[in-house]
Image (tube, rainbow, N blue to C red; front, side):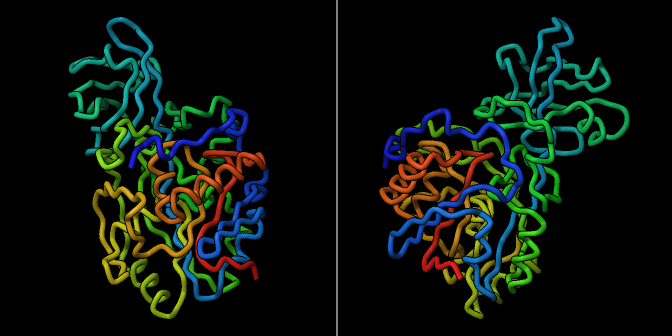
Length: 347
């Protein structure tokens, strides 16, 4: 497979720059895999596609204000440090700009010097390992000085930082939001629970590898950025029981899919655990756990578009995207969503 096989044309005007209000007002393209039918719907109808006994899996990660703007202490040159992954109490794996100026040993200052950092080394991927120096509580300083790390294709200022968080966000650690979850409101969640669907949380801290392009022309040569995941004993048991009783596993977002597919064996049994995952789901990879997927529309030639293609087939996926473009759906993080799976019948 070639990366270019997953290209589609997207007019720039269809890239959503701001969140829709209210959260659950987005459109939803329903793709029935077994009969290849598609239907234009609204996210408000999402609970109608679920059945009592299904289990809905959500990623309860929370985005941190991971974008820090500061300056080199010696030259006062403006710099940007983007936190990717915490290595220990004060050391982080980061992305930096301008990279050519931030060599090992360089000191950077934020907030007039109340927050300082030293570049310790360069990573194989071109990032930096950074150690922070400060007085007080790291998280409190980050809340004061950090900014929400919006994707590079969003150019409008986000007025409400909470709109880049799901309403069920709990565990801090992501550099990007699990955007399929942004559509949910507490009212929708209550409606789903009332219908007899168990909502099970898992955890995957989303890294900025989500937005990194696939640089190799051969898809097989691409390597995913490692991300931390956790599936508790309770979560694994609830999912396994639901499946044994005939319920479907409904994943909210590609991060939930990647988490479950990491810990599910060939028999479809989900095992508890935590660690780092680099799972790459692309056409030819069989799904062991996921029955239904709610997801946003993804960038051309991205690993997330490849994941959707693994479920729907490449040609069918690109046809659905062509329909979404024609019907002027809103794309990417703040955009509309699609629901895909077999036997999708609104009740």
